[in-house]
Image (cartoon, rainbow, N blue to C red; front, side):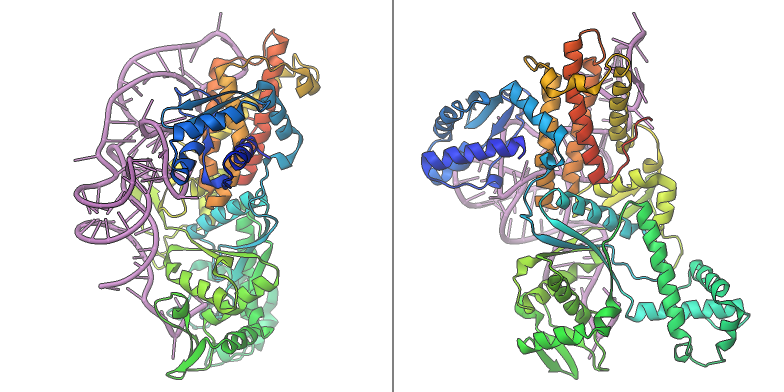
Amino acid sequence: MSIVEILKNDIKEIVKKKYGVKVDSSAFDLAAPPENQPGHFGSNIAMFLAKPMKKAPFIIGEEIAQELRKLEYITAVEIIKPGYTNISLNLSFYKNELDKLLKSDSAFKNNFGKGKTVNIEFVSANPVGPLNIVSGRAAAYGDTLANIFDYSGYKTVRETYVNDFGRQMHLFALSLMARYLQLYGRTNQVPEEGYQGEYVTEIAKAMKEIKGEAFYKTIGNVEKLEDCLQYPEFRAFGLKHVLDWQKQTLERFGVKFDEWFSETTLHEKGEVDEAFKLIEKRGLFYEKEDAVWFKTTEFGDDKDRVVKKTDGGYTYFASDIAYIQNKVKRGADLVINILGPDHHGYVKRLESIMQGLGYEKERIRVIILQQVNLLEGGEKMKMSKRAGNFVSLDELLESVGRDAARYFFIMRSYSSHLDFDLELAKEQSDKNPVYYLQYAYARLCNIFEKAKEVVKDSSEYDADKIAFETLEKEELELIRAILCIPEFIKESAERESPNWLVQHVHFLASHFHSFYGKLRVVQDDKQIMAKRLFILNALKRTFEVCFGIIGITPRTKM
RNA sequence: GCGCCCGUAGCUCAGUUGGAUAGAGCAGCAGAUUUCUAAUCUGUUGGUCAGGGGUUCGAUUCCCUUCGGGCGCACCA
């Protein structure tokens, strides 16, 4: 349990005992008070209670303060102006809490997810080409959110959907065939709506290399490429090639999916038919104009949606019904879909499916990521596949590196448009915020390097060897910032906002840089040195956990 | 026309189911290095939280409305 949770729990307990009122932890605040205010932590609990209790917040505050003062680890409580409750804690209590962070990973964890299984689907790009920068934001956001959930009491499944069933896949296969045949001097053309990119030719070359001359000869001079017997083989080869490529790119980006879920398997295993029947039984389908429609308007959509076309084929939406059912059957208590800005019309549809299948609406959560604007030296770049100037995730990683890329993608709220300045991300300077964090870590490591010359063994700054009688202002503020991190991990999970954590890791680094400028660690006074090494050891550990969540490298030297 | 997101410092953005003097980074200005890495630190300039109305002890936050920007409204995936 984090220090914030401990305090909140005690406050809750007091409120319950004194007033018989049950309050939720997330209902009231507990955080560092502003600069010139007294106390280590401040809470608005009295003001929160003022309304329902019809009592002046200041009086409530005083009553709560009386009880708080009885607690052993609390040294002082003050009630400020309207009713803020400001609390100071025993220094040895801080020592114990820091020690917990050092000793166990679980000290960073919280139980927001209550052991539930969450399936987080993101990226889900068409398997027809390289991942682009939009997938990059989804990958960074989705993976970081999953990391946060791992620390927040969820069992997470990172999943991506492979749209290997529909028209895009078909067009890609035809494009690949055309390019392949061109390599043998044939005049076949890539379809107009097909994929013109040069990478298709590269894949064709790879295929030529592997399959050899004999394979080419089996292909007759068919009129329509899709009728050709070898079509499935092209399709399969192209698919595998692109998926391997995408996997490799994501690996470089630090993202690893537990599941690459194939749309085709849903059809092959009859799951689409099955899910179809289920919805039908619930009376949510009807026929109109020779097509089958799903009454999504029952669940708040602005119009009903076609699931079976007049030609008898299923729509993509129909596969989604089976897909969501499949996720639930695999054990997902919560299904999260992370989609691009052009999919916001899809939110109601997915919610309709969940409800149509007979589950509660809250079981699905659709998060819409806003668009990424790519800037180069302040100028907005227009990306378009047609013009061939869209930036792939590979190119981005090449030019700015994984750390800067991940950091930039998650430093903003998911609901805001993101300006990604290529020049800035590339720049190795103080303008680039990712270096601020990495530099803090490198400085920290350097202190431990220097300390090795005087301190024989790290056990010399174990918790039981050091004194915590007095703390400098910078020391106390740094300690508080460290001990609040587990709470910020929890809040990031609640808000589904990695940027909330990133911001506080930035503040943590800032506190450390101030500390560094003011206080010396390696010095003659062994007592003070041991105390500071102990604090910094906890900080180092905290940075490592946070860097791991964000997906950036802790660099020991810069 | 309908729907979603956005409008906060010169720029890019945080801001917790409404709460302390609205915060960071960059840019600007003035300083700090014989001492563990100056990719740092300290101080400082800069705000009608797009405009208007409402709810209340209290609104950047909730509601209504106007204006401005982005995106979406397929028997495509």
